[in-house]
Figure 1 (cartoon, one colour):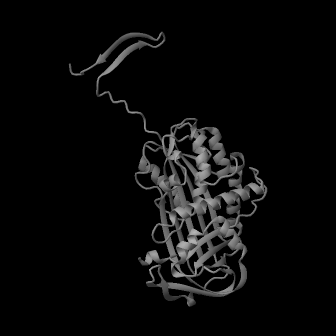
Figure 2: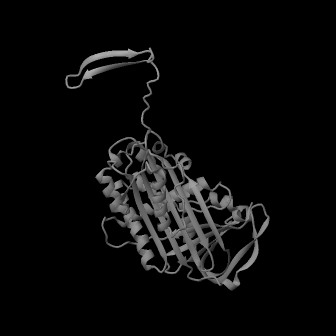
Figure 3: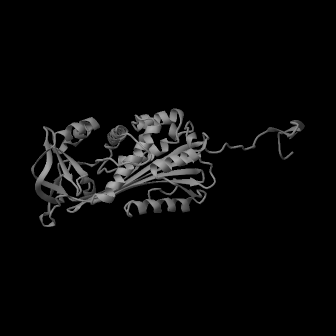
Length: 402
């Protein structure tokens, strides 16, 4: 295992975004619906993590970004495609209640970022083929609830479209997420790309002193040791110790956001801890946190992860959306669209001052390949008068060179 793979080898980090009320704003949404959405997002987060945790090395993602991009896509799904997406995303609300709840969560996050003493922003966008007939009701729903205005692009210019979308992602993530849409993902058959970007930069409420950072051993899962820059801080934190792990909460300035760290008691204890990590268990563990004086040693680290999520989402039950069985007729009134790629990229930097994190998700939608009519074998043909529907000539071709 390399040094790049060591980080989080024994530490599982979760950044908990604690969403509060966004205040009175249209569209309207009941607090109970907003709570139901948060619960759905968390259940999806841990189900997705369970599918990804067996990959090697460090792992970092924003399930909130992924679920937001897919829920925006779900707005155009119908029939069995919509039912599969709802089950995969753990959605319990009907669409007329779901999308306004998404609006309020986005507003809560962005309002907190403007007023909370930290940077936190969420942005969405639709990138549609020029001239494609998207339904006004779909465009209005995504604009109203996701702030995702339609931006016309020409996907026949594949490189130009890719550069345009990637430039938006870079801007919204403060240049931390680059090249989200890889070469070859966009083709002339691409009709729509739905994007989400999230960026966070926050200072610790109790920062670590750089002078106390020292190179110290970090034990990998195979019991070998590497040198890591360990930050040190003693202070009053929310803390809980169980038989198999410890749990620590490090708050950011403003008190609304915090990092939750779960540390297995044994070096090889991470797989068992990950297996027990569910939304319900996390709620129970959080309820056991108590303030106490804690001496903290935490490695300074950076991590970047990148995922192509098609196979994972199919395995979670979202199969039709990626095939010609897809029904996204809520987008343009037709049955020709399907998802070709769901891509995600995330970055995190944890140091003495605080944390910077960014992530972006892209959902790329294509039209089904046009039917191929290749007359390279014998065929029948006719010539007709269209108004009267009269067949004027009829024939066949057995050999075009005769």
